[in-house]
Each structure stands twice: as structure tokens, then as C-alpha cells.
Image 1 (cartoon, one colour):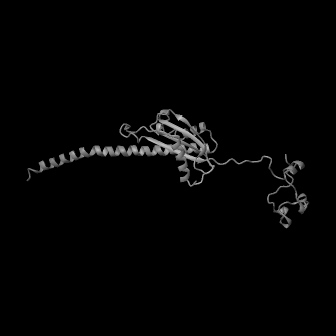
Image 2 (image 1 turned 90 degrees about the vertical axis):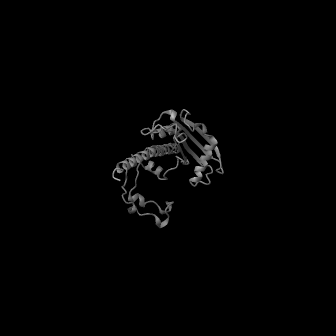
Image 3 (image 1 turned 180 degrees about the horizontal axis):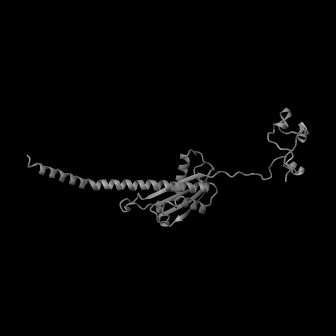
Length: 244
């Protein structure tokens, strides 16, 4: 029994080495997969952010060239900007009177060389449907006449461990964002304060108590009767400030 212990220990150590040799490649593959997936998730977040920034810039009145610059500036410090790895589109349109299709539509490829993995699969009709679905998901069930602007981005990712040949189809990320354009308010530049002509005529911006109290009550359009405020109620008022 004593002489067999060294032999038994060597056999157990040998078995452990064999098990380690069998499991180590599997563990390395799992670790490599986790690293690559984490990298893709981080890049996906950055590309989504770039699309949102571009769409927001467009919703505030930006042109396609400016939308492209806004999106690229958001990833300049963190991702490679080689054109062969990017494809960007800017789209804008107006929905029809029942909100089921576009009465006005325009889309433009603003960046890239058409070499990304997903470029060939980008279809205008599918993009329009994606926009409509996005509006519905945001609660715009009846988006009749709504004007929108948005951005679609495809970016091919360089894997950290050089596994491009082993994860084909998983090394391309998509960014997509749609925003409604706020309606333009029409303002009549001739509208203004009713007192402005008086200010010009008398050459001063504020009155004094004597002049204020001399105004006949029937000349007030608003407020009426006894609701006319007392001169002393205008806290902080300064008498007779000149216009110039």
C-alpha cells in the first residue's frame, strides 16, 4: 500500500492535466465571446447615440450635411471614421392625411462608400415602414400630416481579437432614430404692443402717476370699471424713463 501512493498521485495529477487541457480551449472561447459581445454592445450604444444626435439636429432645422457632421462628431473620439466601415442616410418626409404613408419623402446617402455588410439590404420601402412603426411605438397612432426627420447608420465593427471570419453577420451594428419636426410658428411682425405708438409719440418708455391717473376710465379696454390697477400697485416702476 505504501509503495502504490506515489503511483496513484501521479495518475491523479495526470488526469487533472488532461481535464484542464480539454476545458481550457472552451473557457478561452467563452471569454473571447464575452469580450467581443461586450465590445459590440458598447459600439451599438455609440452608434445609436450618433443617430439620435443627427436626427435631433435635423429636427431643429439642420440640413443633411450638418446632420452628418453632428453624427460623426459624436463618435470622433471613440470610433474609427474610415468611410469604408460606415454608411449613413438622412431621410425626411411628411405623412399623408391619414398617417399611413408618406406624401413627401426624401432620403440621401450622406456618408460612406457602400461597402458595409448591410448596405445592399437597405431598401427605401422597408425604411419607410420602420419609420411608421417607430412613430406608432412612440404613441403617435394618428400621425397625420406629421413632418419627420431621421437618420439610419450602418457600421462594420473591427473585432478586438480578430475574429471577423468566425462571427460573420454579428460584426455590423445599426443605428436608427426618428424625430418629429416642430411646426413653424408664423408671427406677424406688424403685431405689437398697443402702447408702442404712444411711446414713440411722447418719446418716453414710462409714465408718471399724474399722467396715469388722468386717463379716463372709459378709455380702458381692459381691465374694466373698478378693476383698473392703482398706480402704486406697479412695484418697481420708475417714472418718466426716456425712450432713447
